[in-house]
Each structure stands twice: as C-alpha cells, then as structure tokens.
Length: 138
Image (cartoon, rainbow, N blue to C red):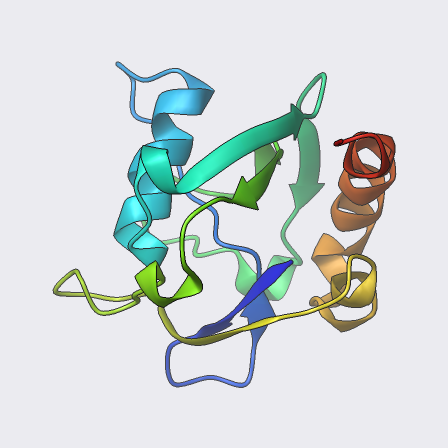
C-alpha cells in the first residue's frame, strides 16, 4: 500500500481528495492521483471499489467554524489500485502546493494502526471490504 506523509508533518495517510460537481468518483480518483502522487490513469489498474460511501466526522477541535463551506466530516468512496508502471513514476512535487512530501510501501493492514484516530473506523471498514478483492486479484 502506498502510504503518504503530509507535507511538513509527521502525519501519514492514503492519498485522497474531493469530487468536483462535474466528476464521477472514478474521474476524481484519476485527477487526485495525478495531483497528489503524479500517477496517470495508465499507471494503475483498479482492482476494487467500496460499494457505498464511508463517512467520518471531524473532532470538534478540527472543525473550522469560520470557513465556508463548513466541513464537519467527509464521505468517501475507496478504490484499491495496483501500480502497473514503475514506482519511480510516483512524484509529489508536480503541483505548486503539494500535499505530501514523502511516501513508502507498507503492508495492507499497517495503516489501520497508524492513521489518526478519528479516521480509523473508516479505514477499518474500507480495508475489510476491499481485502477479499486483493486476495482474489489473480
């Protein structure tokens, strides 16, 4: 699993991003993948996707009450991808405002014990749902 470090922080997570009004979740996947880690559609293969939306709420201390739109959490659709190109294609410096400054490969369940607490249940549910597809990939 590609595990990415938030820029200038000791915080790690999977790449993720929002969906623009004119995009499907899959369109957003490819756009965000390129923006955040430099990969193109032809660099990856989709192995699986969560059936529905997974949700979490932000802890009150992280809710920015003076910004618009007000964000109190997220709903996410997860994709399990296989890198089919060379890992040297992973680049985090392709945009003017990179979100990550490092990455590494980790075992499948490793992120569950490392992700920030309020995201842990969503990670658990997503990884549990996608795991059978990883095992059945070939």
